[in-house]
Amino acid sequence: MPDNTLLKAENLSIGYGGISLVEGVNFSVSNGDYLFILGENGSGKTTLMKTLLGLIPPIDGKISFEGGLKKYGIGYLPQQSAAQKNFPATVSEVVLSGTLRRGSGLFINKEKKKRALYNMQRLKIDNIKNHSYKELSGGQQQRVLLTRALCAADNMLLLDEPASGLDIFITKELYEIVDDLNKGGMTIIMISHDMSAAVKYAKSILHISKEPSFFSCVSDYKAFLETRKGEYAYA
Amino acid sequence: MHEMLDTLAYYFTFPFVRNALIVGVLVSLCAALLGVVLVLRRLSFIGDGLSHVAFGAMAVATVMGLSNNMLLILPVTIICSIALMQRQRNKQVQGDAKIAMLSVGSLAAGYILFNRFPPKGGNVSGDVCTTLFGSTSILTLSQNEVWLSLILSIAVCLIYIVFYNIIFSLTFDEEFAASQGINTKAYNVFIATIIATVISLAMNLVGSLLISALLVFPVVSAMRVCKSFRGVVICSAVFSAVCAAGGIVISILLGTPVGATIVASDAIGFALFSLIGRLKGI
Image 1 (cartoon, rainbow over the protein chains, first blue to last red):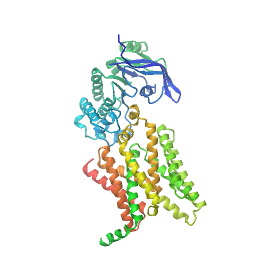
Image 2 (image 1 turned 45 degrees about the vertical axis):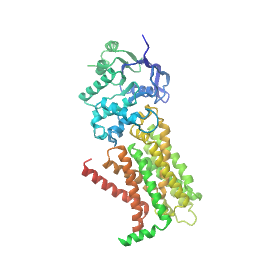
Image 3 (image 1 turned 90 degrees about the vertical axis):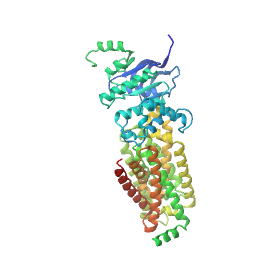
Image 4 (image 1 turned 90 degrees about the horizontal axis):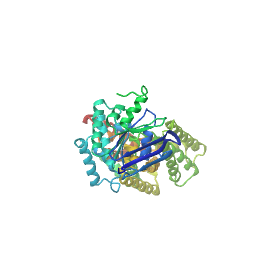
């Protein structure tokens, strides 16, 4: 079997200022994978994501990028901040900021514009590209930020609870979009506490917690939940 | 009307008046550009804190009898600016309280210094008033100060244009920018330095109490009528330059204090833009 691993975490300890939140995390992500990272609030999901992105250093252990994935080649969809919701910017300005590292130079060139337009068409927001970002609905804003992440991504997306604050219809739509992207070859890492979505869409699941974190395929995860019945509820 | 034009023409025969106009417009323009970053990142109060630090530094410089006050004000303000931005990023507890303490602390220290060691031949309340409200100092700029202000303002504008896309990315979403490998820490230090520079320059123009107005009014006004980031940047720069020029001309005609008149015209401009925004339904 050819090894098409993109990202590998070995015996990883993560946390802030030398104090680790979670220890001994092991997992790998291969090309075309769809990994859900689950865990309770405060369990270290977002910290893990920031470590993967290189925003904070790991306390111990190693993250390796393989098979053509570069350190800053991951397209990131952060959780929205309050300040962003009223930010004066057009949709295309936001999307274009995802192309900053593409090609050379600090300026927006034709190549960057083309990439932005291509991804806006892919997520069907090219018709609102001159609209004001702050006037969009929460779901549309999330679509714009996802498009920006696509512009920045080589072959992997990292999504930090993209569905938080969205209603169930928009949430479903968002999951479908991400699923389509995955089927189109994009490798996905999704942070969530939505277990039912994880069981439905994921190819593998990492459940992080203070006890040894759990990493496996979806069917094993269901079995893992069975052993802890009552502790975790999922639909 | 004719008489007013004559008065203006007469005043503009003096080089110091022309200097004041050029420096005033350029510095206001720079303040507006950086104000965009501060306001949108919810850091406007840092501008206020820094202006009070600059007041303290100005007091020390005056007491020490430095030939060029900028030599002291600039480095002190830059150091405080970097420290404050860093603190804000780390979101330490009571970060805003620390800014408040630093701000009023340097204000008090500055006033004590002015009182205890009054500059030779000066009067205390006059000097303090000048430093706080900038009353006439812009008209008494030395040729060196004019050049310094000119060069720094132009440098700030150029830097802003070159790094425009990175400034947008940092302002809109610092974390995403960092995830793309942009050295956000270095850029924050860089931006803090430029902000401190502009605030030090603006001390001469409107005095330390009124600097925040130059940072905040143009941006907030532009946001009333513009939807895009680029629109807000351009609009606030033009707004600020026009208000500065208008304020200086009016102050000459009516004999009002320069700084306060500029700020008053900013406030009127804001009211106007709010009205336009409301009518346009934005």
